[in-house]
Image (cartoon, rainbow, N blue to C red):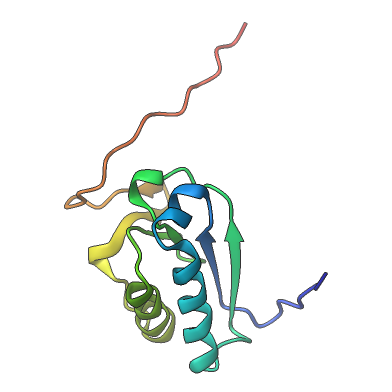
Length: 127
């Protein structure tokens, strides 16, 4: 098992490899993102992690980019590569693929999003 030294890392990309995302090309998206990072020689600046379900199955395939907290939806191999080139390489967010952004108040869906709102998490009742 590898233990990475993450000093100098500027971005962390979480790539959903849950069952819904895998059925919609998650493996191919994962490989495309990692390949683009390698092609652009960004290995020392970008760390990727395969995750299990990120809870946005209707938006599959989902990828999250930190530290910005941008959630991307409906990824294809081409969109995955473009995230690396544009978002990571140039700081340009791919607005048409965003399902959530992060601000001081928490995660916010763009006003023009065609993604489903989803169900609310239950709040525990105090007894």
